[in-house]
Length: 138
Length: 258
Image 1 (cartoon, helix red, strand yellow):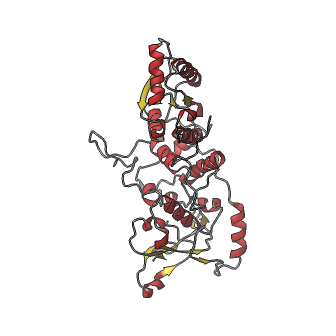
Image 2 (cartoon, chains in turn red, orange; image 1 turned 60 degrees about the horizontal axis):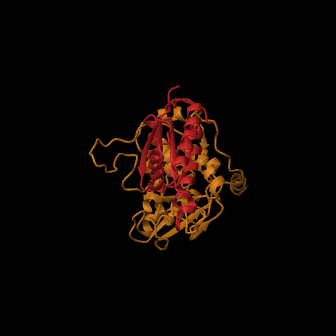
C-alpha cells in the first residue's frame, strides 16, 4: 500500500513542535497534512469526521500536555471528546485507531516526528479507509 | 400550558397549547403522547406549565443546564409514563417503542406536580415497576452505514429533538461561511456521525427523532450506545441533576497534572 493519507490537526504549540522538526531536519512520513488550529479544544468533532469523509485514512490530533497549561487544561476536553468520537467510529465500523492523539509541546521536534511516524505506521497497517463501506461494528 | 390533545386519528395525540381554564378539558393523557414537548419551552416569555414524561423531564433538566429554559418560569406536571406505543412494522399490532423499552426512569427527575399511578390499567403499577427495573440495553451489531443510506436528509430528527436548539446548525447548511454556497445539508453518512457526536452525553432518549424519522433509522439505539460509553468513561448521565456540568462542554477549573 502507498503512503496513508493522514490529516494532522495540531494546536499552535505543537505546530511549533512540527516546525522545530523541520528546523532540526528530522524527517517524518510525507503523507501527513498538517492543519494548524489555535487550540486543540477548538477542534470540533465534525472537522475530524469531515476529514475522514474527504479521504483521509487517519487523523492525528496533537495537543499540549495538560501539565504545560496554566490554569485550565482544554486539551483534557479534547482527549475526552476524541475518546467519545473513537467509540462512535467503532460503533459504525471504523477502527478507532485511525484517530490518534499525541501530546507534543512546542520544543519537541524529535518527539513530534517520532509520534507521527508511529501513528502513521499503525494507520498504514489498517489499510486504506473506505468511509462509506458497510461494516460491522468493530 | 402545554400538553397533549386527541389527534386527528385514533391512536394519535398531538401537542396542544391551552391558555384558559375552560380549554383544559381538551387535554388528554394516554400512551400515544409521543411528541416531545420541551422544545416549545425554549424562548417562552410567560410562565408556562408543561406535561412531562420521564424523558421530557430529563430534556428539561438539560435545557435548564444549557440556560435555554428558566426553571422559575415553568411548572412541570409529571404523570407516570407507561411508555409510548407505536405501530409495529411487522404486524398490525401496536408495540411499545424501542426507546421506551430501554428507558430506565419513566418519572421526570424534576416536577412541581407529580401524578403517580395511572388508574386506567389494572396492573399499571406492577408493570411500571417491572419496566423501570428492566431498562433493556440497546441493540448491538446494527449495520449503521447501511441504515444511514436510507436517510433522506429531511432534518426531521433535528427539528423534533428537544435539545437541538442551535439557531445556526452545522448540519442543515445554515452555518455562515466566507464563501456563499448552496444551502445543503451535510453529506451522508457524515451527517449522522456529526449528529451522534453532538448528542453524545446530551441525548435523553426521548425518541422524538426516531418517531419523526420517515426512514425509520433507529437513531436512539446509536445515541444510547454512545451515552453508555460516555457514562463508562466520564461517569456522566444526562438529564438527572440540574447542578452537574456537562463533562465535555465547559473547562473544569482544576488542573490534573499528567
